[in-house]
Image (tube, rainbow, N blue to C red):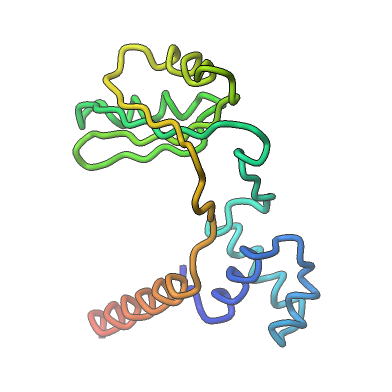
Length: 167
């Protein structure tokens, strides 16, 4: 999908305030709200925008965050990661090329790490290292404008190279 400057501006604004009306966003960007509506729908249809949601910091609700590293054989890591992703406590799952699985979980902030112990029972049988998070220093979910611009410029370069190759 081609992402141009308007798409980048739309993404940047929606990341900071997804409650902003498309009419208001159009006024802010100096384009008709119908254009913004069309662009946002296209970004949703193509999977660039996954959902519009509230950002909630689990620590502020008294919940506990944890990072779990699981050592799995590379040939088994995809299956294991998909199984782990099914648990409701799991927020994010990442796989590395060498088979490691990195899992971010949110559990009740019970005494003596009981929340983690209960969750870890569900993962019994996997070699893992658990890191309960003591303090959240930065809690960010947005993609910085500089990276959005980078994506846009890389896609433009690829498009030019493809045109040159077919000419």
